[in-house]
Length: 456
Image 1: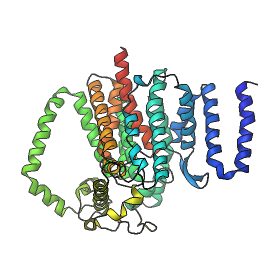
Image 2 (image 1 turned 180 degrees about the horizontal axis):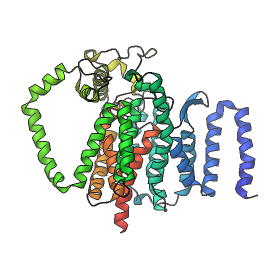
Image 3 (image 1 turned 45 degrees about the vertical axis):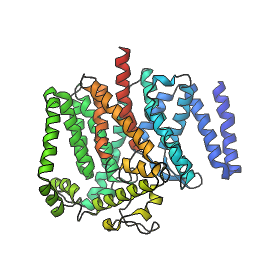
Image 4 (image 1 turned 120 degrees about the vertical axis):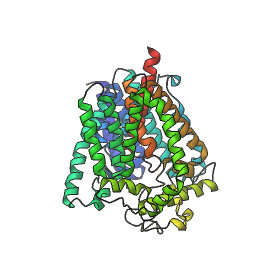
């Protein structure tokens, strides 16, 4: 019997005994258990295998109450914790300067918000969770690829695990007689809402569309994924796919890149000169987000008169902005928006989804600020928001430069990331592990391409 087997044989029963004897210290025993398992994974060189398991578990995980009734997505968050520990051991000799440090700047920028938070423990948990996502999904993926692995299998395994989720959603939808009102809930218990499912599918559509350059079958896969985006009924996801396709056209055709600035100026000129027409369209737009016709659902994105979802977004954005104005430097604390925004709501945007009593919210009124930028401004102030935008700008700059030179990894990462560059203005999913994996993974693909070119 090897030394590692002896350690496990002795410590695992001891941990279970201590947990049973001192249940109030469950989190402490759980942490030591993760450290022990992470060390085993490191010694046995199972890091890549565990990463594959994590990618497969992300779409299939469900929310459970574990350890003092705290909710976890299981098994993905448990695997994430073990993998993070294993990567700490594996990467302990890595030099930080060989990696892009802007995500670390972003994490550190939340520190003032945590210190002055309305709910410090909640904000600290937010920091730990986001640090785990950055470390595992961004730096961990780059480290593994640097050591001979590839990112595509992770996205492929994630997509395979997504198949039963989509089949389950179709079964649910058919059971509800294809009623579009039921779309937000048909992906439960795997995804809490149809919008996050649409965002996930949009990123995958972009990533695999880029892969079609080497294998035409990926074009078919991407088209199939886009059909599922339509099925989710997420308007933001549909529009983000359209933007992704325009980015691909601009990458592929040089004449489009030359024409794009002129087209943007022309569009801005049209909107300015025809602003009365645009205002009139928005004023009299009554299209609903639950319409059966796809064109009507897309048109409903500009309906700020009768569409409760859009009006509530205006309410959440207004609340977040008012919170930022009150605390521009620290915000109210990372991860605390849903508990602090109620006093800042604007009565002009009151609708059937507006939350008045936090203990009895209206059905369908979930979510937070529905904007990554407004959320960070309200929860942590201007500094992390500024760093986040700079970080995104660097990825887009490097990704674009690599993509137009034909680097497939950069094209795949940029197309996947481009969907969220639009989506983040109307939703926020970076604290959802099933989406954070795709977001940070797409960014990692871009930076991997940059390093590979530098090495060449």
